[in-house]
Length: 100
Image 1 (cartoon, rainbow, N blue to C red):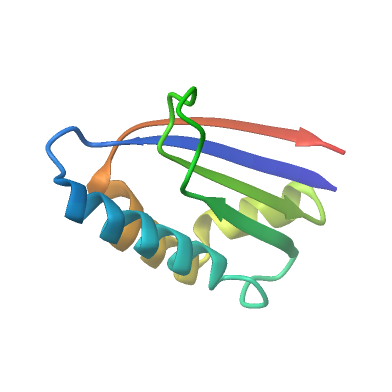
Image 2 (image 1 turned 90 degrees about the horizontal axis):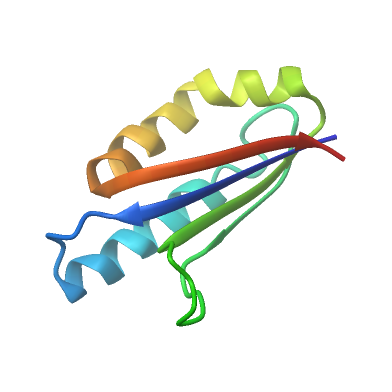
């Protein structure tokens, strides 16, 4: 199995109201991919970190294999969520993929 973990920081120019909407959109969009993409075992988005956090949103996902992760990256449903709900609102992205 492969874990795919991403941390995002949202853009500074977002208002508090926009931040809440963006976080909800990222969470519903990405978690809505469960059962839609071959090889995706589990997917969870955390939007409310502790005050000590320096990231705004975390994706924690599990795939059957590295090949399944590669398929997810280019799957049209994932690309639609990434292009519509994530990339327009994020300033930075850090990713770690590893085998478990």
